[in-house]
Image (cartoon, rainbow, N blue to C red; front, side):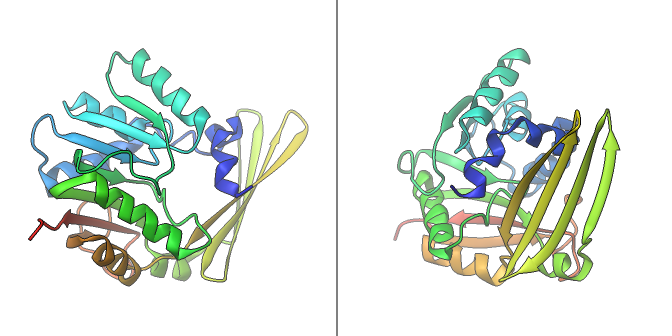
Length: 246
């Protein structure tokens, strides 16, 4: 089983990333609105939506949002949390490599480095192809990924934090063009170990994926504050549009 088929179903994931809440998600959604200027009520697809924090922010701002994720537990949590906040959004368990429909969304998002998980770049291409298939001609795609050059230059090999009775030790290293992370969670006297592995995709990689999928890169950003992308920027944020049919 691939690491991403198990890790996001774990309750431990919530402990490791508990600080990644809706408030933490607001800056990237603000940037999306400033850069893309979606039409009111636009139909937006959230690819690898997780527990739905970005989808809820978009729903609160009046968009018609559908979130997809491979994790059944994440989808259940997204539905429950959205209902609890009195919001409306659709959440479906689905693989990002398989399109749900054709030309059925005005825009799509893929945020918080929810990409680069596959071993084979052919699968990354299939995912981008599927997203492009689901976009209407002229539709937009907004993707937020790590900046591989920045990661290589600033990698923190290990860190430890303790809070609320549990300890999280994270070890990071680069191997075979991927950022590898081992997460050790110690809770109630028991230690649990999990893994993450993300391909260090570059701007050139995304340009190639997009071009083959019929997407045109419009602009790039290097952080949620909207600064331009540079090799030393903390993020690689991409805004693309689907080419209109000839």
